[in-house]
Amino acid sequence: MASSGSEAKANYAPISTNEPVVSVDWLHSNLGDADIKVLDASWYMAHEQRNPIQEYQVAHIPGALFFDLNGIADRKTNLRHMLPSEEAFAAGCSALGIENNDGVVVYDGMGLFSAARVWWMFRVFGHDKVWVLDGGLPKWRASGYDVESSVSNDAILKASAATEAIEKIYQGQTISPITFQTKFRPHLVLALDQVKENIEDKTYQHIDARSKARFDGIAPEPWKGLPSGHIPGSKCVPFPLMFDSSQTLLPAEELKKQFEQEGKTK
Image (cartoon, rainbow, N blue to C red):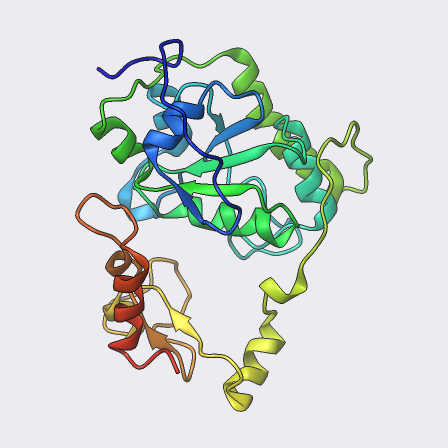
C-alpha cells in the first residue's frame, strides 16, 4: 500500500487551468491541500447494474465527496442529465462546500467516463480550476494509493443536501449561504435549435463519442423509446479510443492522429 497523505510528499508544480487532467501522483501529493476539493462523480449505464453511491461508500479517494449526476441536473425536463440552471448549480456546489477559490479534481469508477461531464459543467459555469483525474479510481488503486471504505455522516449529508438544494431552487425557494458563484459561458453549449441549424450550416463538426454500433444504428439504444442512429452529418469517434490500456488519456499527438484518421481536423 502506498504512503498515506500524512507522510512526506514530493513537491509538484501547480497545474495550469489549460490542462484538463491531473495525474494520480499529483493528486496524491496534493491531497491534504485545503483548497483542493475531490469529487467522486461516478455514474453507470443501467445495463451495468452498478450503484455509484454504494460503491462510493465502499471505496473512494480519501476526503472525496460524492457528486450526484442524477441529482445535480435540470428538473424541468424528463431527459437525463440536462444542464441545471446557474442558480441551481451554484446551490448544489455550495451545499457540497465548494467555493470559487477551490481547485476541483473529479474522478469516476470507470477510469475516465462521467467525470469528464462534471469537468465540463464546472467550465460551463465559469470555474476554470477544475481537472479530471487521469485514469480515475482504477488508476489510483492500481498505483497503490489508499482508499477510504467508511463515510462520515458529513459526506453523506452534503451529497443529500446538494440534491435537496437543486429541488428547492426549482420549487422557487431561496437557498443560503451561496459559497459558489457561477458565470454562464454560452459558447460551451449548443442548444437543440443550434444543433439543427448547424446540420445545415456546417459551421462545426458534430462528433459522436458513442460506440460505432450505436452510431450506425446496429445496436439498440439503452434507453427505451430512443431511436437508433446518429445526428445527420456527425462523425464517430468512440471515446474508448482516447485512452491507453490503463484508461489514461493518450498523449496529445496520438489524440490528434485519432481524429485525423477520420478526417475530423482541417
